[in-house]
Length: 182
Figure (cartoon, rainbow, N blue to C red):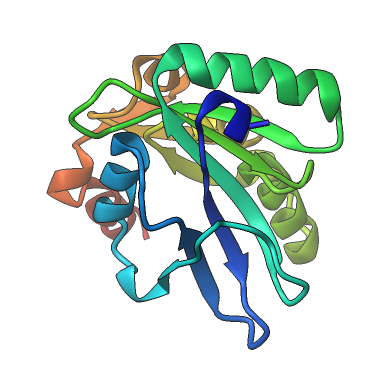
């Protein structure tokens, strides 16, 4: 579906040894190129031309980075075709170009489900948990947690749901918050 719109994703997966990998084609469009350049774990980045899954791949997520018109068309097509079989999430890009990031993963592969599963393993209610967020992919997490903390440079929609807004990511605000409250 992405290729019909001229979009090729970054493919996040686990290899045969369980190591995380981010596969990409060598000729990346500007949006994915910026995202790839900002990824701190560049040893995971691997070129695969053309980008296709192989039998040993355990794909975790497909990430498309593009302008809003392309991303919203792809989101609509995925929702129509794969309704309920994948978790579809849009986040605003943080690069130089205005872009959106469309993430596709397992229906339970999101932060809200992760918090529910983690809380169940610990035997605690998710409403007893403090969470931190900065982007739209944290909206589900904020819906489940009991205390929601946004950083100052968070998306405005997320800050509006926060119980508290602290300093920015660039100031290590989350680390300082944890140090003060532990």
